[in-house]
Image 1 (spheres, rainbow, N blue to C red):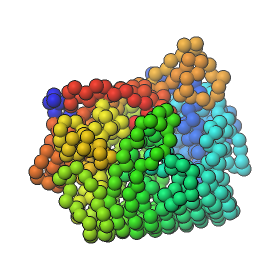
Image 2 (cartoon, rainbow, N blue to C red):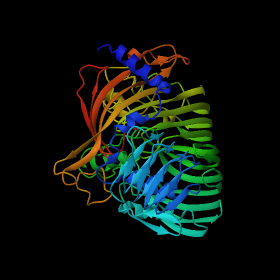
Image 3 (cartoon, one colour):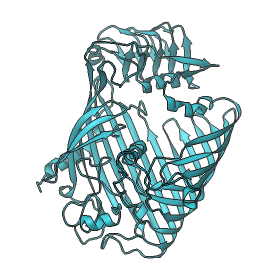
Image 4 (tube, rainbow, N blue to C red):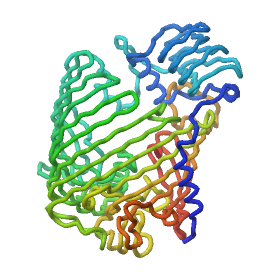
Length: 587
């Protein structure tokens, strides 16, 4: 194996130093060199952001243009429909112009983003100031008006099933009957369908909602049997809108994934349905909890406490489309028992866009304390743990930190750190453990494949690949750490020139036209067990030497809704490159 410790060290240093990377501010001199106007249709996420800003309660709205004189200061956000707007003063928030033009004179300053859709942005070169990102698309967007609210004319068929969200700000009581997928297609449930009635009532800033849904799992056949049935009932009282406090409770009998931080749920479901490849493991949770949550503009925090019965689920003969002769990977057994759970979680989000972030931070933290009685424990590879049946008490943490950095008008440097594992108490139950492998983490390495004879640092397997496969390839690591970095830049391919007749369609191949991003990335990480003996074990206060980490490099093309990539393992010799497709951005 080649020793790439210098490469890993450099990657580790760069990622841990991300706090020193500056924000996305571009000076006036740099911005003067940009051609801000963008060809092609308005990206769907940008159109949604524009409409959402108009609908926001605290936004200053104007129709037919807007004028701000020199020396005047407007605090907050501004949304404008139609006309031509002239900005000579200072706007402390962001400006969005919908189907109109904006003129930014030298004395004008916009401290936030400046976005123009369906118009032009005019400015004098070298003498303007925009603190955030300046963007302009000439193609107009289509919308309809319901009272004072704008509703984007969405051509997406799936948006019909989310129509209730458009009415969420209207007073009164609404009764609904929901039919939807509980989550993604998988080898344990097939397609889980959630259906049932719900009621929502709103008076001012106070909202009450209740839902009583049954879950039917298609499984390997449409039959009314216990394994195919579940339920999910919720009640919530919420006070406030952009800043809110919520108190609620849940009662459920559901199937959850063991790890859901890697691949997007839709990608897992599609791989399962088409190719008989399920990249998650599953377990059953039957119980209930109560929760309290606080929400603000910058994020949210919540605490919940409940009692659950944990059960294993076996894989079933769930149909797939391409080749049904391929056997499903065994769904690993999980620990079973009655557990009390205290969960604290919080999210901080300063990104400029949740769909297509170009700058800002995203931090998600989670703490879980469990105590109860295990009635059976799942098998692992040898010497992974000594936990037996009986009382158990443990604490577990998880953190996902992302930083998005804008480099000029089209470039980005994005960084991510993911960490999780045991904090104190007894060894973690098998369904609360981790792995670092596959497309969602280290795409240059095959999903949960043991490399070598023993001591696999991606999965913490301690046996041959054949013995590990007989258990279903469970995630066995008590702790893990993953570092990811990507450098992105835009590209456009237009064989037959410019064509905007299709309005706001974007990031799709149209008349041999494609807009997207090229991506170069690096990933490095590993998992480990706790202790002082063995190749996989590390003391509780230490991080494994970076020379033992797995590292890969790769690149590809990202079209927003999908991307094509190739990744090559560089910390391990003799492995072939992996080609893969993603249906969402890497992170």
